[in-house]
Image (cartoon, rainbow, N blue to C red):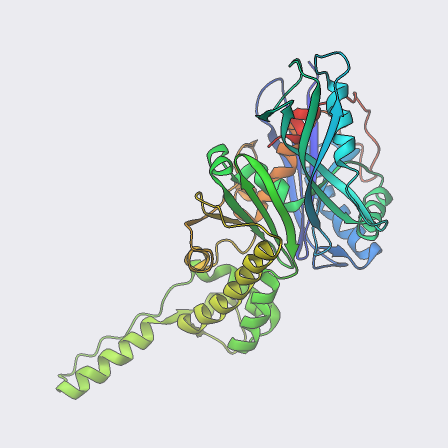
Length: 432
């Protein structure tokens, strides 16, 4: 059995992350190359400058290829932005030969696609939630079953043609084919959610730099997908204004806050009166609230107030979560989320974020860490890389992808790899 190479590029508003993994037989994908590069020409998840975005994408992928010692000819890419919308629709077909086959599945899915999609939009995911054979519902794989009528309940995710065109142009301009365009929320769900959470009902929030992807599951199936145009960059701007820092320095503080030391109160050997003791206690409490940022090399700033930092972050995160809640309710979905909220993405480790989620959504919350890959994953094991890893897991289950054989790095110039084959894995790819 030939080894398969799967490559994914997570295109974010603040960074581009590329990962290359090898699949040997039935083993887990093993990461052999990964790299990240600051984003340019990308805003709120959408391409705003073709050349700038193309260079950022190429730089990230080149770093991963150098680490892996090989080149790739095709990739899975993430897709995000406020233009992402979803809806659920049904498709029904008659069964001619009593026994249901794969062609019947495809026909039912084609019927589900007849939902009205504006001319300026394209379907990127058509995900079967369940199949119904005659009157029997809740079927995941009806192939081989007997019946006269097959119905599918499908979740449809679409994007604007403009956003897709710009993304495709960037990828194809650097000599790559696109194996699949994957909604960021759907990619993240592959690596951070458990089957039990999906079955009970769960909300996944992938909070990136410029956007927050929203995905809900009930009874094991995806029910709602969207993206709101707010993320960690909004928090950074708020911190810059509130702490009177530059954007770069505010970002330093934000990403380092969990590792910053508190300023220790100085001991006073002099005897104190009762009033002095009270004043000293208040002063000590104030100092315990102070974080030492001297190691961050911020000009003119050595300390910041942790209380003020927390207040700024909490206000913005609460606003974003409240907007998400409002969008879900406006879409006609109830909060049937016994498994709670799972938060992932680059902003998932901000202090107090799970507590804010509990308050806003009224359910338990946890931070989602990606899992499912082996190999060189030390630098991509944080929530910021959930979608990046998810692209590989998606590719593993997507047997319709082009898999390239590993070949030695030819040098600075990228060359296309040989295509081993293309097969269809319909249900394996689409069913949650």
